[in-house]
Image: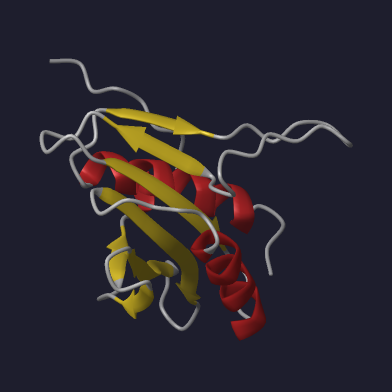
Length: 137
């Protein structure tokens, strides 16, 4: 695994939140050793959707099923409400293509049923791997 893949995954998740229609997005900043920000175990928080909901995104670039399952278990412990969008995103890389193709495998929490559902994969454009910048109008 590439050393910068986790950072690319976090950047792409920030773009993904904007793509979902959330105008205000915060990515948890990774601190130095022994300093940690924890916002309900999520890496990206998004607010301001027209329906009034919030998005809570946990992102990983790990390939092991245990990586995803541990994150899903941790997020399932919080008392989410029906209008919260809680998702676990896994950045996957298709190395058979040049340039590499990226996609998110998406697991969505449904609070009313207290279950995880696998959504369709989301293709990650190359520009999503870079730092998000507001587009000038």
